[in-house]
Length: 242
Image (cartoon, rainbow, N blue to C red; front, side, top):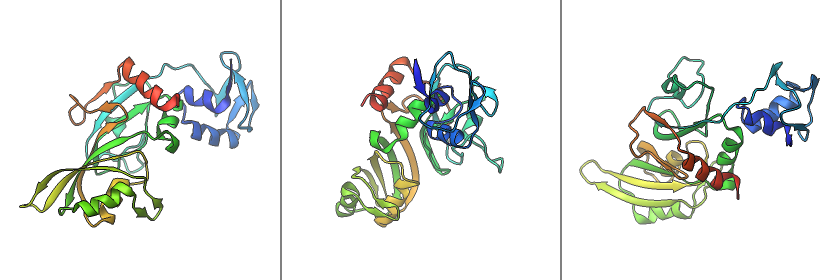
């Protein structure tokens, strides 16, 4: 079966498809010993010998893990400053896996990690409209008029946000704070925090509670679990079969 070279690399768990494209253009990929730099190249899966930086690709079973990321942990595989990363919570996992998207340093909650490059690419691609739900505790008590600005989309420095689903869950008059449930399908950097700041109610605490069909039910902070076959199938249906 013929497959695009970048797809074969991503499915081997070496990198995401976008990273694989960078490797190809940089001349780091060979097929049957010859350097290939053309992104449209197709290879015969199981027959052609594909190598990245001289290392032959090996078939690797895909694994899918959900972590309840604590606050104060970096969403990356390695950190030059030797700070704690999400991978530190997954030392028992026998293969290399990568985060699907990011949660910033001060945000906790649901983070998906996998070595399935194709699914990763699809889940984070803007066209797929994969919904994520967050619980945000904000300073101050926003009016419905202010929340409506988020519901229709608000202008940030990198563009207008898509309409968000906003639910005012709780109000604490004594602490002058409120708890919001916010659902979005975009992935702009620090988007929830910037949205709330834009209407004058900065985030004090932020937690992601849902990603696509996945929820944190039964998973304590710092714990992880493997996804079930049915969860993987549902994710694939959402991301790959549109």
